[in-house]
Length: 433
Ligand code: HEC
Ligand code: HEC
Image (cartoon, rainbow, N blue to C red):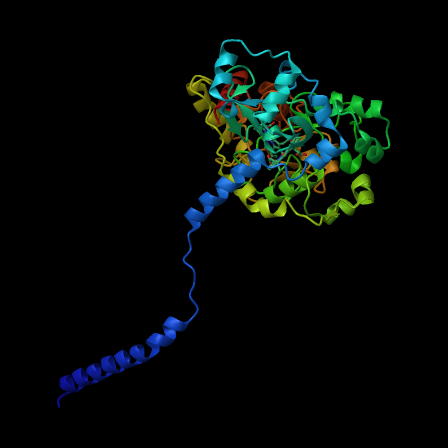
């Protein structure tokens, strides 16, 4: 055999022994652990649907708080739809039967009649509020995320239309709604204040605001005497954003768990031992809010879906004609250039990819709200969809009434020396993102 022939024989031997080896190992391989095929897209869709249901419709058991303890349902039976709409409650037109839609269009529904409010609750048409009924009687009420983080497109009438999930409801006067409750015992005992004082605090918040820290630290007022409430932020445009809330408490899931347990009064589990800090959170530390356990947990199983749904809510695009295109284009250059806005509001997230917090000193504002958070700082607000939530002002407490006030603050604090044309262009850009 020459060298070439020997090579061929060797190769044949190798191939045949490989075939024998594979045939022998075959059944053994087939018996090995089978790994389930991954279906991330299908799974995500299912979770997003579940999350939408939770966001819109789940009360997480909060009727135990709003119904059983505050007895808010009793007050609701005396509130006319006109009043309910005036305090910012919204009506989901898709929950209304066509006969009622017709009657509403024809002006044949008596919006001054409180019985209509109860009927709307019975139809589950009040966004974010669930009425519980026993033989036609309203016996309790619970709230959902959509109460504060959804509005409607007003397509039928002001306050009545199709849902806009994730939009901040800047018309909603939560404080006034809570103040109507017949029993404010939870607030008076936690805060150590009488009911009149509690009502005065609640009604001082005003539309679009809520004080999520009140029952943690008991600080109702800022040092300047203004209410400690903050603006309701949108729950859209949050994918890719690291820390959440105005003061960067944590992730979406952290905050969802905190809110569902501690703000909405739902039934679940919540652990955040930072609340044991009795200096920062005297009430939370005393009451053990940093470690909430219940026999039943109606919150934790929904957190994954809830998070995915919120992350799937894209910020809505600014409508055509709502800003000047040419000016916005020039404003973009100011934002990314001389204005130095993009140093922190990094496009397209418009917050820092990374650790997105700043000290009050850096921002040139007081530390009141930052000090009420474990971080002691302010989170770079993600600006996409800013055009949807100008009502109530800008920054965490709405201290800047208009965008020009925000821009003037930065111009002065950072010494930007922007001309009035550059400021105007920058504002058009802010309206467009
Ligand atoms: C009573 C009104 C209210 C309800 C109900 C409510 N929230 Fe909020 N939400 C707020 C306010 C106010 C803030 C800002 C708190 C802060 O920064 O201190 C906030 C903040 C958030 C944020 C942070 C947004 C950001 O920009 O980082 C998310 C996410 C959120 N809420 C989701 C939810 C979900 C999910 C639910 C239901 C489990 C819910 N919220 C229920 C009022 C509410
Ligand atoms: C040092 C980082 C930093 C820089 C630079 C910066 N921002 Fe901000 N921005 C923040 C933080 C932090 C907040 C949140 C403040 C608060 O919660 O009170 C914020 C809030 C805002 C808001 C209010 C958002 C809302 O929902 O109310 C606007 C608008 C804004 N910035 C625009 C700008 C513009 C325009 C520039 C450039 C001129 C700029 N920012 C530069 C960090 C920054």
